[in-house]
Image (cartoon, rainbow, N blue to C red; front, side, top):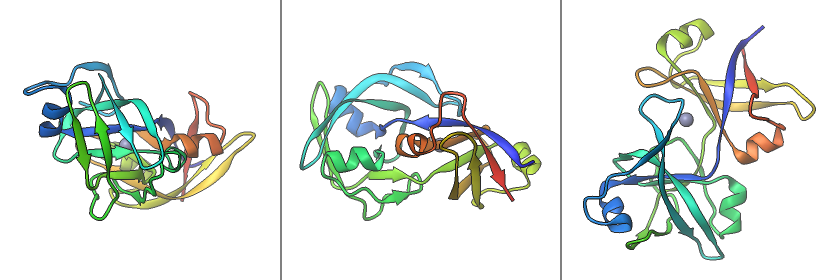
Length: 190
Ligand SMILES: [Zn+2]
């Protein structure tokens, strides 16, 4: 049996840099935590913004905190296509050459020239958990999901170390493809 990891499905969301928070929500605004996420220190915020692409707008998209060094919009490919953006599959934080979009908040508008991605699917593990699973940070693994629409995902990135806790992050397209419910788990294949 392989190492099992609970799946956390990521709906479309965004992370914001502080000067964009100032424009969208008002000078000096601090993000308001609404719900803690599994990853230590990460939280869903009360704040939402509209994400505008060439073809359509996604309304009331959740901001995740805390503020980041660089604004990052994470969409499933279905969401991106809906608003007319071709989002590349990228690891979090690797935003060079990615497309932009327009963000509309209650106090202002930000024109992003880059920052829209479809997140590269990944598994968070603490150092101890990675050891137990027999993997290390930056490894690429395959995982198996059981069930009626069960499938094997290749190219799953391991992210391990300080600030990580056991959880697999797939987006809504991936979760739907595999028929994942709220208690879905995946198994790391050796
Ligand atoms: Zn993640």
